[in-house]
Image (tube, rainbow, N blue to C red; front, side, top):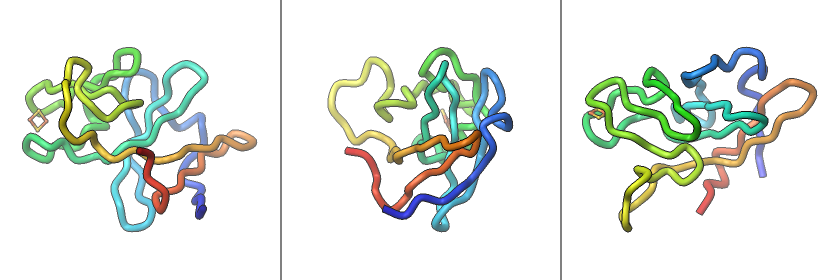
Amino acid sequence: MAYERVARLTELPAGRGLCVRAGGLEIGLYRVGERVYAMANACPHAGYPLHEGELEDRVIYCAGHGWPYDVETGHPPDAVGGEPLPRYPVDVRDGDVWIDVASPLD
Ligand code: FES
């Protein structure tokens, strides 16, 4: 485990993501209620940065062409099979957001 501090919790905007860099990767952070999710930031369709999309509950809608991704599963909400977007463990300590890009979630 190699957690890196990447943001303050208060920096995460409502209804959008926050782009951070960790371990040479660009990651989108999303706050949904009391939870924070970290997911690879490039949209698989044409590479738009997903954090610029609109977040509704756990679904981020890409600003490019509207493809939706569940930030917890990494899949489109109605997907059957396929590879999810990489997601990473998140820890919030004393108002700081830490992520571990060396240990992607399954
Ligand atoms: S680049 Fe994301 S939907 Fe097209």
